[in-house]
Picture 1 (tube, rainbow, N blue to C red):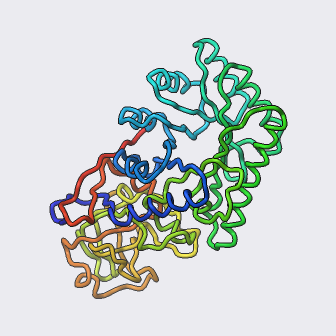
Picture 2 (spheres, rainbow, N blue to C red; picture 1 turned 135 degrees about the vertical axis):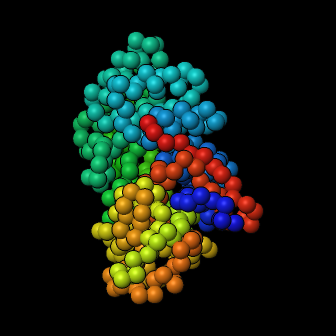
Picture 3 (cartoon, one colour; picture 1 turned 60 degrees about the horizontal axis):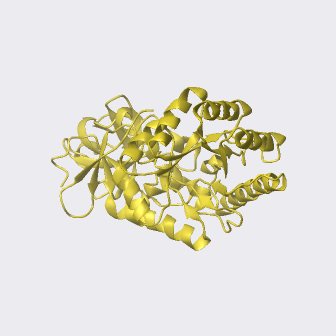
Length: 376
């Protein structure tokens, strides 16, 4: 099946991906919320279509290029989840005027005023959400800040439509116990619901209350007051997520097919053609419970070869060796020249971004190629 594929190549295990999609959608259905998958992980039309076929409603994107690409393929309900800046508003407006139901996000008065001003000039009502910071991880307005109400009023008074609130509990990637994940998930829910209540008390309609991260979505016990969940990496999972504890290595649907191209037998190294240009430079497992270097080593069936990792990566070369640092004198026999291996990624989003296409495998037929979008 794999011999005709030029390595390094990105592979999607169809069975694992389908199982991951069903798991998340079934959980959101049971919790009674809408699910809006984040397509920044796959950036692939075919993957997103499978997510919608399982019951997802709309998509989340991280770039306007993604929004344009997915809209051209028939996706209309799109949330652009990075805070918009004045130099990108014209592109957002162009999408909306072509019929895209694009919602943009702000977390500052400057951005809200820029949207309001452009809407007034163009006589167009943008749909706008405010990002709320519920864990101190990255962007967003504090849920108790007066700025929250001021931004919402600026949006409404400027003639745009204030659609609601969103948050992302990105600090969940640093946790690794069920108790800690449940605690953060409840904090995420509680604080954004509190923020929505503050707006409503101030007389501002808040229709959408949106939360999202793969670890909190799979750990939360209640989504009372929440209307929507967003998550992305769950569709493939990765070694960071297995360290966090929301999946196992056997759930990881994305891998990189690579070929053994040489050895340094005195050092116990096998050299493969997947370096950081294939795996990315993401070393996300370095600070977690189990460090996989640049990826976990698997055979062509995607069964983990225990005790081996991709320890070092140059641009086009990867160094495969024992994870404990001891030299394997039998490395050339164990991994002969020309043998094929699959490497599981630390971060599926970053590894996927190294490729322009995926090879869908696992159905028994010849691999099917699916393109992906890159860039901004």
